[in-house]
Each structure stands twice: as structure tokens, then as C-alpha cells.
Picture 1: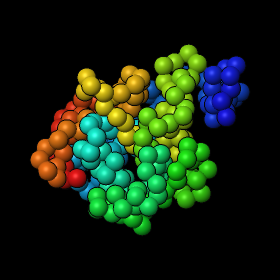
Picture 2: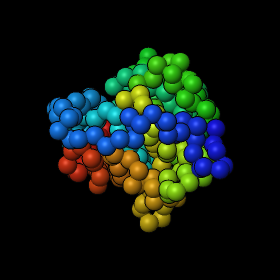
Picture 3: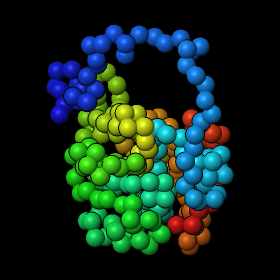
Amino acid sequence: MFCEQCGRSETYAISDSPTGLQAIAATDIEIKELEKTPTKDESLDSMLRGGFVRPSTLTAYGPAGVGKSRSCLRWATNMGRTLLVSLEMPQELSVHSAYQARSNLSNLFIVEHEDWQTEAQRVRADILVFDSLHYSTKQRVVKGTKVPLVLWEIAEWTKKAGTLAFVVAHQNKKGRVSGTTAAEHWPDYLFKFERHGGDEAKIVCPKSRYSPSGSAIVTI
């Protein structure tokens, strides 16, 4: 639910406990090697220096038909139990697309609505694929920020569950993410898909919090 007075979802209420509001000394936190989950896409894993860090978020954008949805589904289902929030395609066509993309269908669950949190918990989803951002009805920004509610909810879920979320977005005429600029600044990873031959796409990664920026060629 969304609170009109404070501009927050009930998920984001600040705890009354002082523990969550106190600063923590960096020296009190154990430094560990980042654990990365490989996608089994050799070119992409090489670019990411091993795979995606958990928890983290990704915005994938590019022109229509370049392979954004198919690629995200393949990577996600290769890494774990995946919940697809399919707002653009009906379930049957989503499964067909995932099959053609060589996804692991035994790891795929699909909902066609935005009330996905309960289903994510029920199916014990490791990864969320939200397709697509521009079909979301939760575009109102959270009060005091420029982040749409839909992105805030997804980010909070990844942090709480310690998991991954891929958001598929459209591209505008300037070659940027269509709509709010928050979709580019919000994620931990930003992937721009470009056409590269009949069955391949070039992925340009201008932003990655956990690995150097770079590019990769993937088969879609």
C-alpha cells in the first residue's frame, strides 16, 4: 500500500528500533570477497568478472526486438528460481519466448500483475524479472526522491531477500532509457542492448557497482 501523507509504501516504514538508525563503524564490518553468481553466458560473465553480485538490481534497455527480455530470462533461470512479472505478454507467449531463449523452464514462474511480492515469497523466488517498467502503473515517485514506487519496491525486495532483480525498459529516440532518469541511476548494473547480427546482441555496460564497465556479445 502507498501512504499519501508520507509518500512511502508500507514496506519502507522506518523501524522504531535505534539499531537500524545508528551509524556503524567500517572497522566493525568484516570485509569479505564479493560472491558472484555466474549467468553461464561466458562473454557476459567475463565482462562481470564472474557474474552478478547479490543483492543487486539491473536495468536492461534498448530498441524493440533486440533480445532484452529473452536474455534476462535466460540469465535469471540459469542462476535460480525466477519470478517473471509479465505485464506485456500473456503467460503462454512468455513461456514460448523463454523456451526459444534457451531458458531453464523448470526454474520459471510467471505472474501477469504487479502484486508480485506475495507470489515471490510463495514460490521462493531467487530472482525477479520485471517486464516491463513502462507497463507499470506505479510510476508515482516516492516522496522526497525521483525514484518511481515500482523501482523502490523492487530495490527493497532485493536487499531484504539478498537477491537479484532485472528490470526491462524501453529506449527513447535519444538512445536513453525512456521516461524518468531514475531508471538509469537507480540500478547497480545498467545494460544497453544494441543490435549485432541476426542472432546476437551487443551489451554495453556503462554502469556497474561491482565490476569495471565494459561490453559483451551474447547470443539471443
